[in-house]
Image (cartoon, rainbow, N blue to C red; front, top):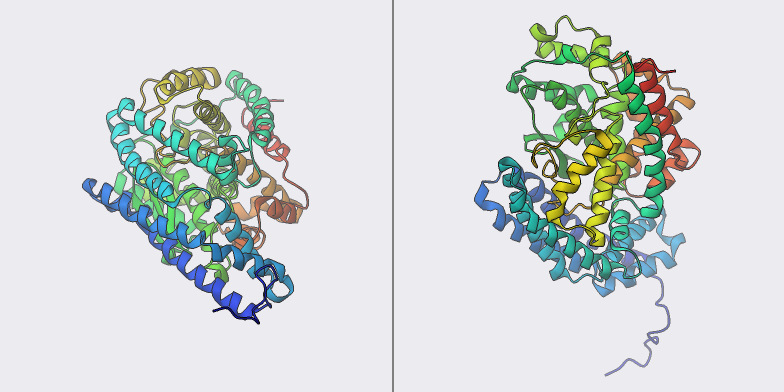
Length: 516
């Protein structure tokens, strides 16, 4: 039986903003609960689960992810978003931002069958476990078939998401909105044109910083205590932090009130612990300082991986490796290792932590050579997606590019293509955001200084509150409500420019190495 008074389907419904807001809130609660469960399982699982738990964990995460996708991509959600965006004056800026972000999340998923995305989650959960064992055994062959399957699955999903775009460009855009190879190619060209000759000049200089003052054996348990000290120095909220141990450092966790850092320490390299913790602490500060009103919505969290890596690389390098911060940092180190480091001066620490020396491991690379590690991965990922290379080709290509860019011989795959976890997680397209984030950070520092902050004085004081407050106000507070380009323009008064990064590297390392 039909209702003769019902409006034709083609006519817009009478606006009912209260009902639409209630429907949006209900959707957000559903998505939030699934995200919380997925993020907690995915973050804690690899750290605390026994080896035999991998398949069960993968199945749990896959089914939760499938339910999340089905809820997000339901037809009524599209109609809801249409109504919200058609009535902006009734909704307010926060609701409109929620609708915009949900629409983008939905658009990236709606054309990929939920079952296919769940299968990809199972694959990457298993692949990550295989990668851990492969790295420990220096066994690329065991991981090789998983990488081929991951690339093929990502290529297929990219075609479903947007058949008109190159598949690798689709994934670059997923990790940093608005980017593609057309964006990254000139960016990396500009960075390479700066770094390669600058590194050559540093290597040829007679004024090389001395790193030997930080050599030695450093007790592992005291290093874990040091990790907590570093979080306090950085200003992380410890009541919202869980610190665990893993093979490859990462930051995860499901909410503003629960951020997880998993890291490692090496007995013979205390600086690896220092800068891993400062790096992950930058991620944590971002997550903990999003507007609390966004906590259980799609606006919670960092807006992109480029902006997230801007925070981690900022605290690792621009603060952490600055000469001004060497005093407070050394004070923390000397409290835990008074016998070994008691006679080290802040200037000696500054020189030791800024030696430009090509190394095999990306996470331990100095600030100058680091973008070359990212460029290598960017080039290899393009070859995998285009079909120019298969997983079996990667070790040889890896060795050739490390010889070309860094002048290094790669002795084995554990120090080569197996060193990073990202490919096992299906994060191809992520690596370029590390270099982009470094460049974002250099421009953010310039904006702080231009706005009147005595940046060196703040770092030298050991109280980073003014830096945190500036970043909270201009970046962190906004969560996903604003994209990186909007944030950079508002915070810096101009669009993003790589020149701040290349100028920063040139000035810093020219001074360190006595270059004209």
